[in-house]
Structures are given as C-alpha cells and as structure tokens.
Image (cartoon, rainbow, N blue to C red; front, side, top):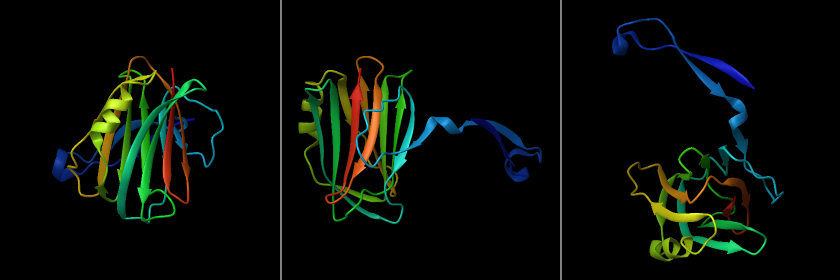
Length: 167
C-alpha cells in the first residue's frame, strides 16, 4: 500500500515554506520473523530486535552454504537475550544486502574468516565490514553474484540475527 508523506521543509534551510512530498512504499518494509518460515522476498527491508538495547557486542558473523539450497548469515550477539534493533535491506538492483545494527556496537570476531567463507557460498561474492562512522550504528554489506531473495528472522537466548539468502 503506497501513501504519500508530506514533509514540511524549513524556511531557514530552503528559503521556502512550501512542503516537499515524497513517496513511501509501506509494503516494502517487513517485521523480521521469530522463526524460519521459508518465505523469501526479492526486495525490501526487514527490521527487528529490541530498540532499548544500547550496548551491543557482536561476537561473530558466520556465513555458510546450507544443503537445503540457501546460504545463511548468522550475526551472534553477546550480553543480551534478544538482538538489538536492526535493519536488513535487500537491494536487487545493486545485488546487495545491507545490514545495520543500532546501538553502541563493539565487535569481537575475525572479519577475515567471514570474508573467506562468504566466497565459498552459492550466492555471495563478497562481504564488506564498514568502518564504524556513526557512534550509534554499525553496518556491513553482502554482495551477490545475482539478485537474491532474503528471509530474515531473529532468535533469542542466545541472541542471533539470521539472514537466509536464496538465488
């Protein structure tokens, strides 16, 4: 369902009091699942996790091919029962999935191990861990050989974010 949001722009910034209009496609955003359902989407954004968790420690990003025909990315969190707030965006035009984890993120794992295992999967050709430029979030991207479908869900105790990728 599409609807239009009116955004009032500031007179001081733009020199005008007329509103700017933007399109927003509500159907492109999904809540991450709590269990695997084998429902893959070819594009869109998935959000989940707990918005109240601010101190985040990522203890691993594991990537592996699954015999069932998909590749799995698991983000392991320590120090919490649930994952912190996250956003996973599948951009088929750029053949890329971007993962953003919100909070004061500290990483404690080998990025090189994740980069090497990504090359052994069916769908991925690269994973790029971006430097933490913002103090309240951390991002990484998954680049694919072809457009891919995603299924995103979260698990608790221990806290994990699961991203399944299918060609």
